[in-house]
Image (tube, rainbow, N blue to C red; front, side):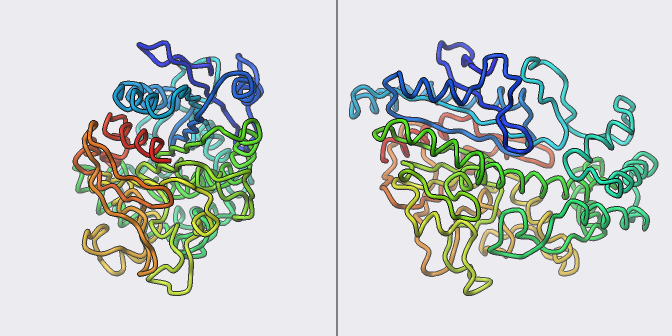
Length: 448
């Protein structure tokens, strides 16, 4: 049920699910959750609202699991909670998890949390019929007849060519058709989180993915499907932006209208950081909130590390897409980012998805700690910019040490000491249900 009880506690939070078009789901067995949340905010003595967004590759069961883990470790930070209640008598938080369809295929059945999700595609799999796979990818990417035919070509090749050394020509052409049909574009740095990439090059993507995947002892991650994963990545990145700028922005404004004295704290992970930034920005950065939110916490963000700066050093005169959030003061408290060198998803695969052709032709490494590349992720480097960009560099602290957070400041937390566990292509990307992370979230709320 989307009115959720955190395991091993009696704490309740609300899960609001939206569809691909940003419309709230109407098949919720507990009714329309947004209205229930608004009613709770009207009738109960809520002082602080925490809006939480998951990242890529989360269907409803995955979102449930992730939010339960996150909130449980937040509740375990009893010292932080005691301190907040001491300095703010009557402190009463309302936690709301937002679900937006971010898995290119998956289980979106709200009533059945135990159903199986397809978390990947194996070339040897016989579980899912080809027609179903084509339908599922077409639903997420493009449902035109040309896109379906291209998907058919790609998926059949993946079954027949488990580990080819080169991308078959007919598959490369199918990818170019599919890229066109998705309406995805490449507009370079400073553009929206869905277009800040170089032109899609399936052959280079395939070759770079093959080279890197082999370092993991095999090529099951890459193969013919590597460029398809890249297209899915960018399509879901675009959906995160669209959902945040439209439905997310309007929902935040609806909440802010209920009570003027309520504080708002936004906490996101991976693509969820795009959702929250879009929620503050509104469509094309033209949205107007009722008032600034009180804190913004971005955990291992999977979008450009230049997003908040006013002048991108490698493209002088071009501002980051979300820079208006800074100039318009849409966060009155602190903006916190976490980054870790152990997060392979953003340190290695993010730049591959953005610029595979350049990486292949220049034969450069994916990640250098002593410089900030053209295409890099927030979760790999923190928020960056030119000489005019001011951010405080700090190490993530243990679960009991106080942070000197101050309103109006951006903080980059080097989190490698704690966000470090994980294996495979994603590395430590999801190693975030930690008390040290929860402590930093509470500290940001305290300082707001």
